[in-house]
Image (tube, rainbow, N blue to C red):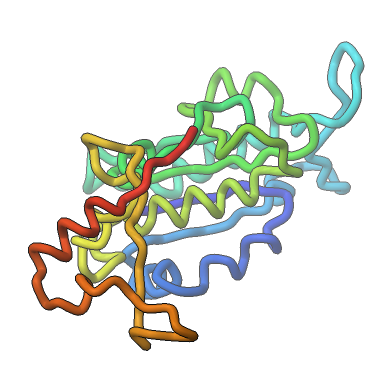
Length: 227
């Protein structure tokens, strides 16, 4: 899987993906994540990427020219003649998008190439959304300063689902929200050694060695996600 991120603050993201499971997956080239400075796609000497909105109003809007150039360039860079089914999927991270979920993450993990647009200020020119964006996604009903943090969330949640990123694929099947028949179930309580600390003991069933009973206990302790 290849993921390109367009941002005006690349330094926010440059080191985020170097750690943990995702960092190892990038190192092994299972997942390819690249961060691009939108200013690199401007033509003027001041590298201007935003301007005032037509019709007046507060804030600034990211201009269409650099975004068009960035997306067109990234699509061309990722194209390959060997795989005719190869396609790019452009996502704009915005509070106006559909709410992100594990189900969406699973769908995205099957794609070849994702381009993420990190908005800033009052958003991006509508012409980019109309002509180039395939999907708009929100990570929650609240306002952030930009799309960089949502991009981190999306990349981490999608990449871990790509085959080979997590050594044991069974982990993903039993994760919270992963049951296709019941997306509201969360994980069961977890304990580790010591079995008793400050008078607090772990449930006896977990030390029984009876895996059938342990599985029953775990299923009974799974909690429900409250929307």
